Picture 1 (cartoon, rainbow, N blue to C red):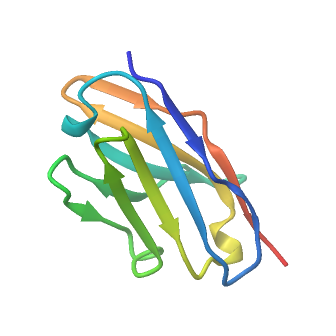
Picture 2: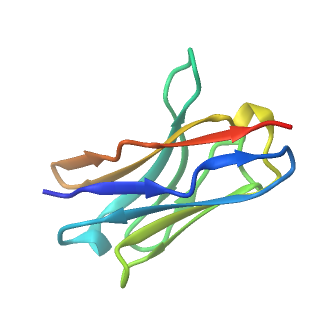
Picture 3: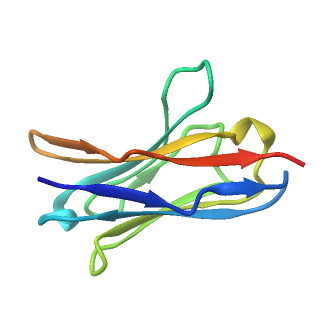
Length: 115
């Protein structure tokens, strides 16, 4: 069983930055593909970043060039650096871990971008 705990959310002004963290318990973190998703009020949950076990990363156009996903396998932690934040980035951000048939989600952390 893997538990994922997100942290780092909060209130930030437009144009500002935040770094989210997702700490994973359990084994095999380094073998897992890690994701960040977000869900804004009244909208579907959407993928914002993915990092593979080998370090491959991918982003949708909506965040490309502004968000950066990274991982520290020694700390069992994945990060999401968010720069040049926009009001439309306001959402609950969720961490996800996938390996083989195993699929885990965190409970989310709220990011609010507002002046």
